[in-house]
Image 1 (tube, rainbow, N blue to C red):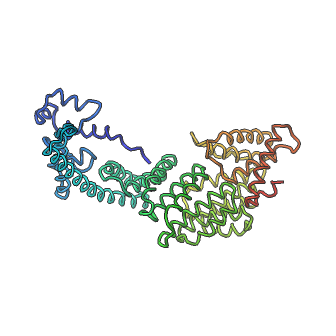
Image 2 (cartoon, rainbow, N blue to C red):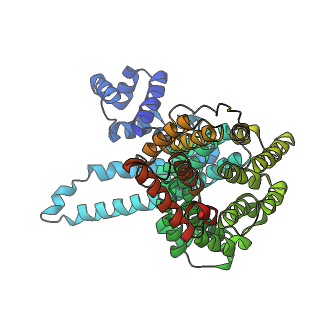
Image 3 (cartoon, rainbow, N blue to C red):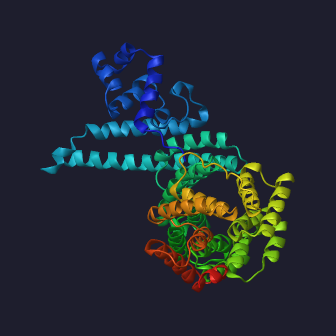
Length: 494
């Protein structure tokens, strides 16, 4: 999500446009104010509301444009369709002026009934106009968000971002409501589509928090906001927090037939959060119970890949069964790549590598989505054959959990290629990264398993105190995960 423009800076930019049409001397003459006062207004630290009101009344500046950047700068240029909104805005400015002139402080003592009536009438008129304008701006905001959402669905990110910038300017005038939540969601989606997962996480968090008071009203949409927030947390490897988000969403909205597909998606995310923490049996039961309620497209792209990997981890299916599912769906093949990197089995690496190449050659998936996975599997295939290939270089500024993941995979490749001394050095670096991870960040179960397996393989059973404690740490992990249903670790737990 792109950062919101500072409202004060945006207002000053629009005032600069006004001064490009009228000189400061002309503005001072029309506003009946000293030139020095106008200059101070235009260049001071804050823009007073009085100046904005004067510009609307005496220079014909469009208040919607001045306050929110919407429409034409001057009322003379405004389209007939916007005349009603313009008139309401001008009336609102007039009412605000009359309120500011009332000496309300005098009412604190002996009440002046006439002044009190005037204040009450003006406040009532102000509230009515504000509610009417909020409704008008709300309709415009909904149209903008609808257009932006469709643009994002069709991959027109640049066009969508232009619409979202306009929506950000209009949103404060529309007042609170579902539109504000949808705006945050679309801004987060735009950030994710441009690869900015950190900004997407912050945006999805805001959307979820804002949707909480509207949970029952939003229904299925509330589940969607919860799932998107959980998804961003998975990307940042915070499965425990993702599980909390899912549990809150499921508790707030009643189970209804019309929202069953969206609810199933959140249930699946909750099960995946359990599985990625090594609680494989509980996660598998939860995912399997709800996958059937998901729409076909989502089940193929999201449900089936996670179920296949979790079943492999639980030992309830063989690799050949998983490979058959991967041959039908590229998303399953990509998920299966995680398994083969864990397994280090040359035949499995070859089979999944061939599948991913086929999918990429057929144009079913873009190169940018799969090339990194193909590069990793290629490196592991060579390492298993005794040919050490350089793993892909890490991007600049990668998160701490990505550094850990990369160190684990490099340790694996070096160990497979027979370079145990170098592998041991990287394994110790990986352990330091693991214990320095921010609170709440937890690597995926298979990555942790690969790290601890390297610990057991690279450190002899009879060793010194430090190395012995590392082996005990690894064994504790494998025993706990095996007890939670992760049978792929069972042979390492003894």
